Image (cartoon, rainbow, N blue to C red; front, side):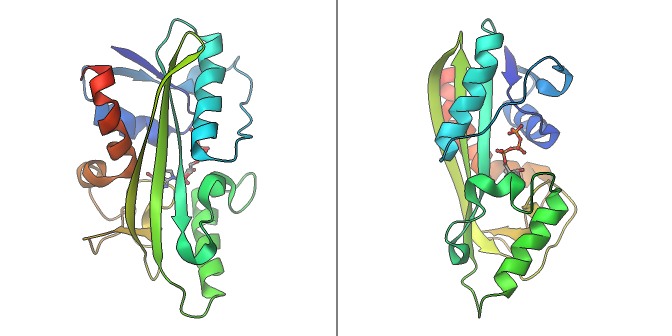
Length: 194
Ligand code: ITT
């Protein structure tokens, strides 16, 4: 089965390809140069995932389109960076910039609570219509300092409940068993028939 991922984040594409397995042929927007930039104007992960899925499905109506909107919610920061995770340190922020800003913000607080969660909402669309929306989360703590080289985004900052390693220290197979994305996709499995 073919899936078009409404993302330009190649790390997400890698994880979807691994999670879905070889019976799915996964492509993303990295070679779609004629598609306009999609403005993520929603105020929730759900809204932004729907915006991305519908924008791509309208111009590729025959394809099965999947969009992922995700991010990290840190309790001591009132749920930030949340839906602003990709742009936390500014519009052109790198993953490293965002992680550094996260630790700077926590350092400003006196003994901050370190509880946090990754959230992921996945929306699947076809012919300009939403077929299903699912969500998943992974709870844990923000590490004392960034650790590890694997993964992407805030992975060096996040230690899942029951682990001592950050997501960036775990092998991809382990992250893919317990991640917010894996849990959301698990709920989509029946629909995808895989
Ligand atoms: P697309 O919108 O093109 O899919 P994006 O990277 O902008 O790509 P989002 O708007 O959903 O995606 O922002 C998600 C951000 O949250 C992402 O940039 C990461 O920094 C972070 N994030 C999401 N999932 C993550 C994960 O599994 N590990 C680490 N960070 C993650």
